[in-house]
Length: 509
Image (tube, rainbow, N blue to C red; front, side):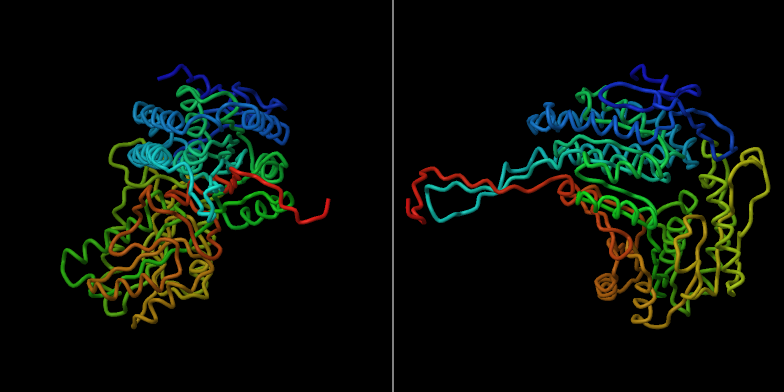
């Protein structure tokens, strides 16, 4: 591993990277990074502000306007992305551990994230390397050469969330670099460490100075400045709806490109015929647990709304509750732990408030709904909350309408296919959803009617680097992964070349 551990150690403060240099915050301010499993600080980062954002944008601007990266041959850009993927594989265990301590997820989840990040870098390397140089447009004359080409947008500002810090950063950085852009990334101030580590690997891989820049700091200063900065050509934001609206409003002043990936309130629709066999029943229950409780439900695509056919409801919910009670909560670095803490005390308080409101509105608590008893694997000071199942829910409840972002599963029921579709689509969001059925025709019908950017049939949560990821409605306007993910970071230019120019003679002269 490169000798960059001084940026990750407990006394680190030079986590701002601009123009090829690791820097302190201009103000000298720092922030302690807390392990959510015990609420104890374990790292220190620079707390940047608007001045640091300006320095980073200026560096990215110079690197784009005057540097070599935008004009680097595609094969060389692809080769660098593949080197980054190799470095990620080399550092898999360390990065997985760092992601676990930073975000609270299990080490195994962190390692899987690293694998997915490496896959994303390789995918965009292969995609850009295999592209044709341009699309020829027939102008109807042998004297005219007309071609449509794609060029980098320019300076890209990237604002990423706290739940999947490394993965979400890679979904933006890999296509942006493949397209020839420079960038400034602002990770969440709560979980910045693996993004800092990723920038270190980009430097180690040979990325020229100024191409990759990072400013650690809060959204209301650094993020807001990046969104409005006139030197930024594109802003890509992943996070909550309210913050996304502010980013779009700030970016509109300079009419920059905007890509927003926002929240979700994702339905998991289970028809009774999917559970006609013991194997089918066990699989559907297992996937409902995975949909709702992986990473303590802190997932934008979490299947937080279980919508189950009425004849199956009681049996399905009983088994789901039985297994939810057995989920092993604890520090993500401990062997055997299946679910870690919430990311912060603020996030746990938010989850508790949603559960309290649901109970006041008539929901039935089937399990969870409280903080667990402390244990050696589960310090009392940690931000733990039990997996919670709320039965008897309906659309008017806040917990059904709004994104909780915690280990809370609501249960609704339906009797007909039309009712199932109506319930699944009855949301302001439209990020993801799933349908479980043994009827192939019904599967296609329901999937076709669901107004969500990703629909899984008899599965939940897989994604493919080759397939676009994005949502409908208030889930955002951007697309990540796949060819559309690369297109987000490009501009289209039409080049019309007249090989035999001659006077037009429209006007007397």
